[in-house]
Length: 139
Image (tube, rainbow, N blue to C red; front, side, top):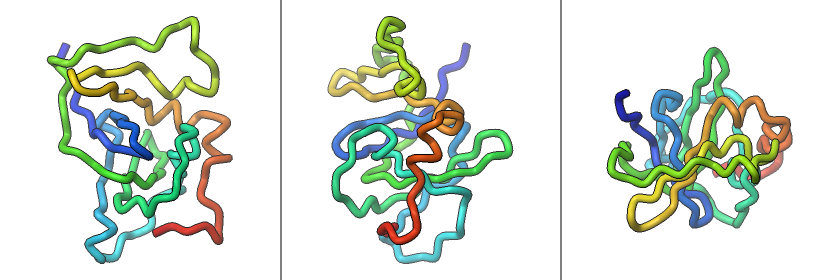
């Protein structure tokens, strides 16, 4: 089976990996160019419970089937394959509805990277509760 490529991004000091097949586009908001609307904007830091004050200068547009959503990230790294990383499955004994979007972890020798599933995030009951609301800072 071919190795899957992942987009690695950071939120509040944590590293996450998202299968690149679900990523439509990455925007550097600090560049000052106009960024078109793209579905609902999810506060992924709130979703994962790692909130902290940050301007999150990157926006990642995600597409799952015909559903589009986006989120902000503190940093975006190069697209990576984890063929040489240690892959750890999420412990079934600890699985709950709240952590269903975390598929497992990659350990690249320096850090643990949470492997997340875009479809599981979108289908989660917390997805609606984690949207940015009008009046909240967006940039």
